[in-house]
Length: 153
Image 1 (spheres, rainbow, N blue to C red):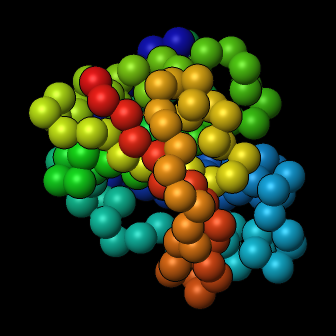
Image 2 (cartoon, one colour; image 1 turned 120 degrees about the horizontal axis):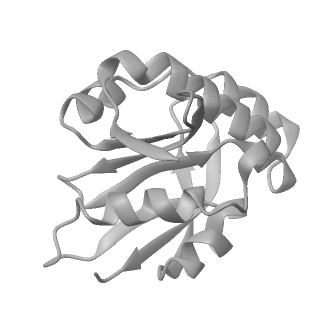
């Protein structure tokens, strides 16, 4: 497994993996009427900006195959996204990505994130503490149930 900084040229490839993850892994915790618009939504404009700022870590296999990626928003000291190929879960890819995202964080502030319900146990294993459940207003128009989480470095 190798890691590199994602670029704006990666947006389509990363978004395709994100869409697959929403359809395959989030469906265990969300109904079809939420999954459909969520997975069909286009990448937000901020993704190209975050990638251009160096806030994306991409994990690839030795042939350049995409294993997963994470996006960190330094302004909010926030893990914006972390997705691992559903066929490669449980192999330490997510944990390795999280370590690299946390290295981008400001140690003087808590690192925060908004976790999908299916991802809460993973983030807890990474040292995040669950806060309140919230309804994240997704750009697709659905209110996604999520859990606000935080941790110190």
